[in-house]
Amino acid sequence: MYNRWSTSHIAARHRAEFWRAASQEARTPITPHIPRVESFDAVLTSRGLDSLALNHVQVLNTGHDVESTDRDLVRSEVPCVFVDLYLSGRAMVTQQGDQLVATPGEPFLIDGRGTYRLNHADPVNMLALAVPYAALGIHASAVDRLVARQLPRRASLQLLVAQMQTLNLWPHALEADESCRISDLLVGTLQALLLPDSADVSTSARMRRGFLRRRVQQIIVQQYADATLSPAAVAHQMGVSVRTLHAHLAQDGTSFGAELMDYRLQRAYAMLCGARQSMSTIMDVSARCGFSSPAHFSRRFRERYGTSPGALRRQDR
Image: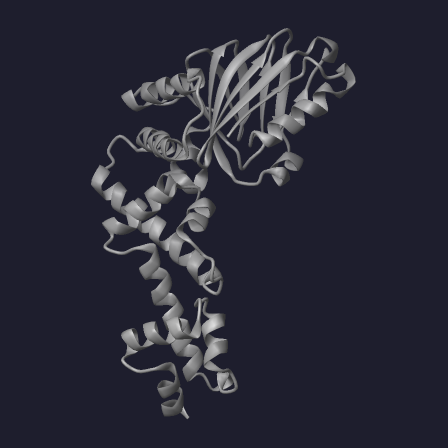
């Protein structure tokens, strides 16, 4: 996905609202404060990278401020952490009672779940990487201690800067598979930056896998009855790529299909044994547990429990 918005052909009286709407589309809902709207000339370019977005903001002629208000938070569809990087210009950043003077080449983090303000006295040229909190897994909790503060001087920080700048300059559209791989790369670099200095990487990786698997199981519990539930749909809800979803579950010796089938069969068994379900047919139970057909349900049930749904039901009576 690649979008571009420009105020150059927008009437001055409509530019603030146009900029607000464009920011919403680019996953960074804000309220702009523009003192000289007649001089406000700005361009916003947004490149989608699977569940991530890289935005390039150019305000050419005048200073302006942007604020994330409570109203803006309501409009936020997916909670994100923002990695902001000024290429030129500077900002006074305020969030959670902390303040930071952001200068070119020095990225910083903004918590998209809370209000914040960026004050710009002069024109600016900046990049903003929007990363869903769900994609960070166990590392998401580390964001709080780094919001609106100078980030640790690490190779991962410089690598993230280089990745954002390179992608911003890339002139071609990205294929879906490559977009997913690059998304994983960006998330991995940000996770490396968020790790405490003393963190054991293997332990952290296991914790993230555990977090991801529990999240998958939560979604299955809520949506197992949907016969169309797929790895792609679950990965989208979690803010990760399908590749990442499969890879982490495989490292735990399981798969999305196995987790989903296991829970559907458990629920079907409970329904067949429950007294309140005595009037339900095998077809009803099959449909309520998300199976594509009663025949498929009966086959998988027999493989798991060694008996048919009908035989189990007769035994329970």
